Length: 351
Image 1 (cartoon, rainbow, N blue to C red):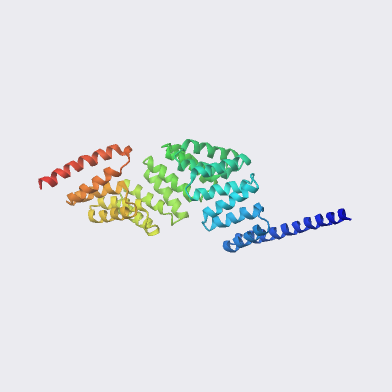
Image 2: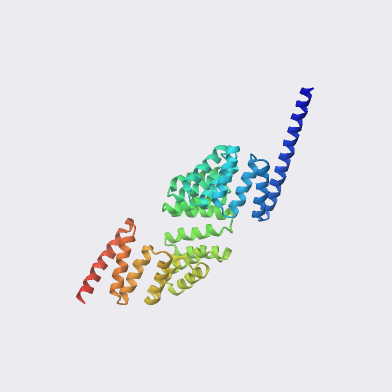
């Protein structure tokens, strides 16, 4: 008799557990539906209900992480992905998404570890290879990044993003012609890839093919008129061609979109200086330095303009600040600033 009771009790327990699981899955599915229509806070409440019923529901932990990610609550998202991985160490989506959250926090080395884990589980996960490449580039490891993009492209030769990112790493290595070939491959796949047009324009500018670069920036801006860096770089190319008024117009366009784009303020200052409008140029350098107080180029350019209008003491201070901040690889520019600073100090002393 007791054996029958035990059997009945076990069957009931299994049925209750099954009901609980179905209930957890129902909450989880509701949360996913809410997440798909951007109602992330409500979706998180549903995932919490599912986890309360079944704390080992890996899908609920993972899905909660996705919603937290969408709300830019990255640390909390990472905690959820860790919970999902603890339950299912081969949860490739959890490893991959944890990498994305770590990227958003600028923790690139940890993100690379996550992409490696995802790739170990699924070696054909092209987005993990691509993202690993992006992180390696962010760490200045360009050759390794290129190998990752090549891995992604060996799986999916039509992955336009990987072609463009490979181009970015080649550009960083000064291999501009090869970079342009990669951007062309990306654009053949997706002619409306604004970033690829923009970056192709940058590489052409590095080769002093300014008119071709401008045409690329125009292509990018036809697709995305609010791409502030494209306006800025179009301005740079116009400046290099001596078309200073047109350059100023482009910098103004960039700054209307992103008033905190310090390079655009600095570059506008250079164009104004070339037009002999030194006071306005200094105003632009000041804006750049307000945003980035350690922006060495703006200190250098400000010093030059101040010297031109006889503000010798201010120019000396600006050159001194440039010398303090400039990176060692700018040795020639540092030597120039040191020479100008010695001359200024002598002029100030003589006066």
